[in-house]
Length: 494
Length: 120
Image (tube, rainbow over all chains, first blue to last red; front, top):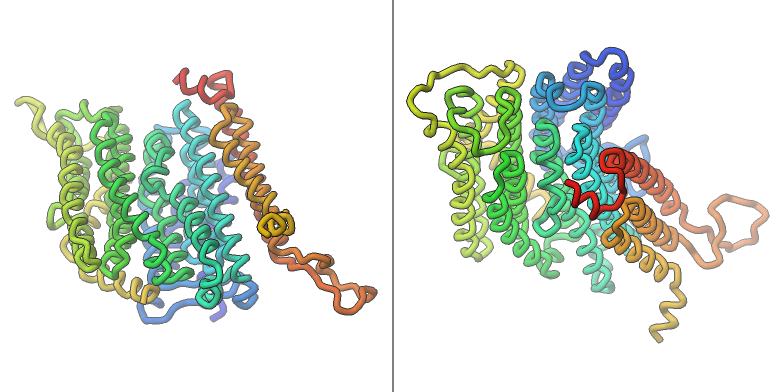
């Protein structure tokens, strides 16, 4: 019974512990490391499923670390949003780690293959901690650990380009963390608390007295987490870091790491400041403006890239714009769309980056102009790639369409129908840079093509296929996830 | 009077100045080591801010002492404890950044950012 109660804490600790045990194996038995990591992540996934089962039953889970009660101690709080993120994180990490068993030795120096899993587990732990914590300072610590872990995942490749990208990423991310910490300092100064519900009640009482400080706090937190989440003008570190990393790292960074910061931002805006402040302080308009720039700008930048992974990285900038757009609309449909896009984009980007990794594994090709005939050499991989691309563009029956629909509903609900035009234009732009790749792969290879099976190992193919099936599932049966997310949104918005 | 208000709260002013100085240092310096020093200056500013938030004028360290007179105030120990964590985090970021810079130096033979950009 005691174990049942401490489950949220075990979730964090039991994925932190193998991270450091891994260091021992990394020295002597390097080939065991991936399987140890998979075991640990599978355990986390199972615990997340159990937690999800409990939360679906209608309860929210509070756990006080070492029995210190809320205003003083750290509290772990698991609601629908946290459970959704936990399932997404552990599920995607499981698939990506399975992918990396065979893919990794080809992309990073052999000495690093054992240590890589230490970093992987550390990043996962910090991200899970950030999602479940209910304490602002603890959130900052988790933000920093995620930042360092993510940087180390990039530098693991050990090439010139990735080292340089890492340094830029590290500088900007510690700058962002500094801003975030200053924002938390302001909140602590105003309210004298760090626990989110306590801060919220105190802030609601005294915020009339500190109009300027409230502004400063909001802008510091927006800039701090905005740098980390690659909100458009602050995205400059992203393309280099995401494209020069090993492909399993790219999938993690692009699909998951930038999202957890958005979830933290969502929590701070709606659970600390509350809905009214968000609407009163015009922060909403800033976010809407930057999201529009991100969607248009990211798509144009992606359009001119010739290297596949760089194109995917810029596409991430645009997709982050969608999430912020839904978030800035500030209605139930809008925020639901943002959360849904967090899930679906994680599926799509992971699928695309893993396919890019598989293509590199078999053929060594990186440029989108060299893809002719790939559709017949690697039919399974390219089929998954095509599904993910169609979903990016927003064709009905694929997951991307559902978020575009939900965003359109949200912009109608927010009385701002112009954003529907933006959504349509961005869909066309996405088509402009994804369809040429597919065209190249299937239709430009002359007449003497023979259909062959992929030559990549099954451990690489299966994760890609599962992701592609997930996208189709979300596109055809969106009802269950949508109603769950709507419950998550209504819990903290109204 | 505004100036006297600023003078009375001088720790906050210094914290803000340090923070701005650190940011400027990160964004404008060409030397990578100086950028790392900039990160440290910025974080020192934030730490000073937290300590100033927890401080009470005339307060003593929060350790119970029977010899102290009645009615003496203890300062808030929580921000100091938080900053202890913050210092550890900042230390690890610095260590990691320096390790990456050593690696860059091995590749390019310089720690000057524009030179590295030119050699790419």
